[in-house]
Length: 409
Image (cartoon, rainbow, N blue to C red; front, side, top):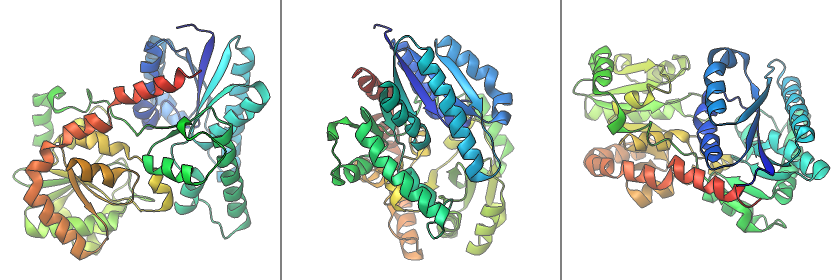
């Protein structure tokens, strides 16, 4: 492939963040192997950079990817975000001006998307709008912006206007879900719908694989948690709060644990208070809870200890564009899922593949039906998990789809 063009991947999230390591670098290193010339411009959090920059520098150097970054400022929410945006924009403009080749900006989410929009107009750069979700709606529904005050209302109006501008001006749009693609098509914007490519959050099926784990390491982990023995282990993996419904998940667990001996294993780096409070409300014995963190390398071992895994997500409009990363990871480890409807393409996938249970309403009746369904069909759901992960969430399939987009330029 000719190197007459450079793909400039622009991210407000850091490559040294867990998200950068799991949801950005696996794609970019594989795209570089396919011959694409790639440069990353990211905004790094100092504490994550201190911990991980040597590792990340090794990964990008081995893949022949250039990595340029600024440091993430935190402070007053709006002011620090603006500072981060301007620092990132300055780095991107410098890269474009110093490049002797045609530059295509691959912009991850909306703030980088604004840089893509600017560069398209100013420098005639290529522009891939990797939208990730309806960001402005997420900010409002996640209560980060309040539309009832002038600042929140102005920010929302500005970004909804820019959202459409970015979609129209871009050369390609990446959506995480087919549901979001259909919503965009229904807006009847002056754009060719074929430029919207759906690529969900994929998973490294080699890393999240029952066949690739060390049995001795698994035994060590089991020995640290003897209370899991002969119990139904319901797990929850990831951060808690904002979108993830701790009260509802504990109410579901209460019904499960009233039926059979069960443990709720929560794998999170967040503090345990939310889970303990939710357990108290639901009447769950805290002796049936285990809350502990895990590194990415140990995550497959924690997941494989699960009999099933639950995640309930607040089903707002913006979540129709969401593809939970944990879904592919859990299924890839052979573990069935319990979740709620109206989250991206999640319920459609579960219904098509029979790899778990969905609930429509957060109430005792629906929890009871779901528990009975899960216990009755557990083995058949488990049989369909890995094949579902390979069909819908394979990293290499995601790389092939990105490669097809890159080859448009």
